[in-house]
Length: 126
Image 1 (tube, rainbow, N blue to C red):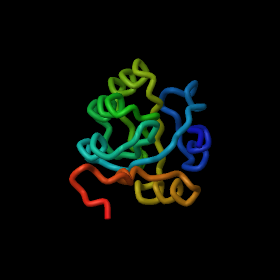
Image 2 (image 1 turned 30 degrees about the vertical axis):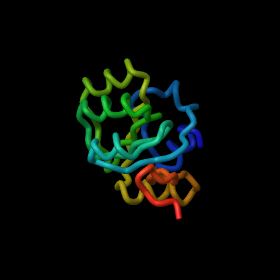
Image 3 (image 1 turned 120 degrees about the horizontal axis):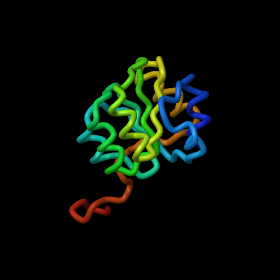
Image 4 (image 1 turned 90 degrees about the vertical axis):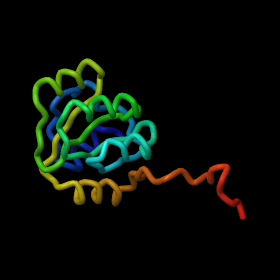
């Protein structure tokens, strides 16, 4: 799914990165815990969050996220927007709460960031 389509679906405003709305989004993750984002997201995922601090941008870069969607109409400061612009991470904001925004995307077929289906070496393969 293209980020441009997600923008329309969530009636979102682009804060920076309008030129990158053609990026493909393979999954989405809704979280305010950046440790969970680091642990559970997949590459080319969209992060939906209510956090607006600089750590969100750093986490997005480390996790190879496609973009960040701020929920509940939240807006980051100019320093956060500038850092995202430099790292080419699109930032958007929607007035929808996280639960509804994630539900809209899930209902339209965008996968979530569930745990990997493959068992790790310490789990039984029965």
